[in-house]
Length: 171
Image (cartoon, rainbow, N blue to C red; front, side, top):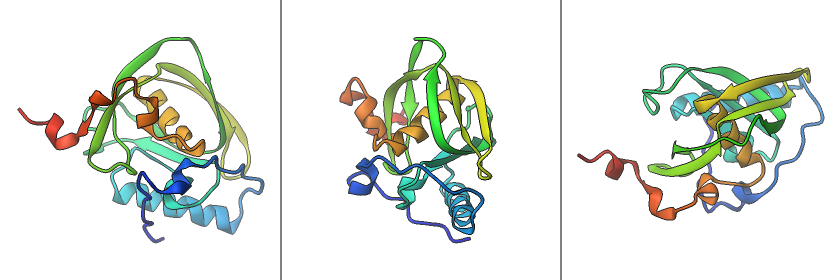
């Protein structure tokens, strides 16, 4: 499947609320998922939302094993999540650095819930639910924000904590 162009901050499609998926296990949905997987892999991403490749549907994928962009990250299971719902398990928030394929080269300090429950359906329309903490929870929240037209700088408390990655890595 072809690698798609990732839309960048400033593109109006990234600011829209995505539409619910109504039909499952279709050739179109299967093709979208394959395109998203190929694109995420080519970009070394931790996740990708359909709106990031110009498709206005509530579909996200994520998963982290060995990833050069996140060398110290814990493993996150490869997941296809459609029509997601996120519920905080408690009120504990944690700030951590995030990046985004739609904001290449930038990182920001973003507050997120530390423990969440997420639910949705898989590609066949079968419901599932999981709990997640720490980096896993952060990835899910980040990707699902894209479905509501939210980019991580909109979550930041202090834009002084938005920087280019190479500047943050300077000795």
